[in-house]
Image (cartoon, rainbow over all chains, first blue to last red; front, side):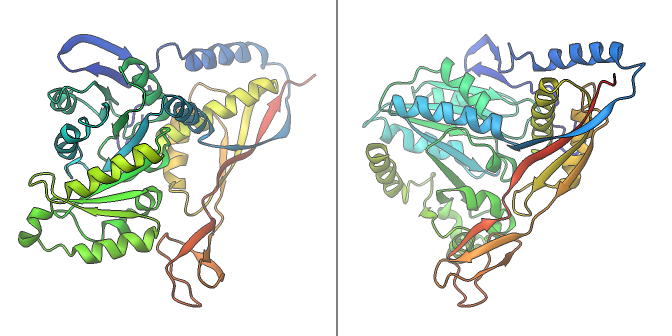
Length: 271
Length: 117
């Protein structure tokens, strides 16, 4: 157990469906890694008491995130085979990921099927909001985990009724740090910031902005009331990642949404 | 704070390899973590000791090498040290910088203790 953020050593993520209180799938079920370790430990305890061991160096040269990355590639292959365009939505808590989905999904689903994976530490609140739109949705509750990983998405997508040639929105846990490192198998990463945050956010959390393909500045209807310089924010974001595509919109008033919608539709055909 | 799940994946990888090699225990793990990899080495060490409890790597010492970041300018090709993502080319002031090193995140090697004869 980590004292800094309370990240669990159990990896106890759970899948839930809104309105089905008895539905409950443990992401790590069937993963016997941990038990295995204990058996090994015991047999080693029995064996080691008399002997002086010799030590030697073993070369691994292995990517630390290899397990996650390999699984992410499997997810990616599954999406590719079914022509599912997967977006990984990332932001701090409260910058409007779910509101944006609520606003844009009704328009997008006129053109093609949409499904959603919701990530939060607790509750199915967001999944309930999405379900009200009539699209398939599944909630991943990460427990004390601070990000989604490829295994959680792998399990979630098996429980979700996705159609071929569709859009999958994966709403990550609200956090601008940790989710940046974990590939889920998505086609693109979308980072969302809102004008009630600081315009130096891209500089404060550069890893996330560096990894993202698209940046959405949300809540621009509030610009007259806050000290937020949209131009400066964009410049900061471009300093971190000059490949970043940039959209400014308000999920509340709908301003700027059409451009994003058009972009998603275009990408869905091209990707 | 993703260091915990990362510590767990290091322990998993190291244990699997150690078992394959017939190790009695793992006494050291050498990591390569670039300065731009987005990992806090101190926090990783802290989490590693928790993650390794009850495994072959329980007493392993983590040695972390942290290579500096290097950026390459997309305009003039100059290579220069960077320690953050929003670097500016010292030659032509361009911001079109590609990171060419410093994002490494590898388990390089480990030291295992074998059963004596």
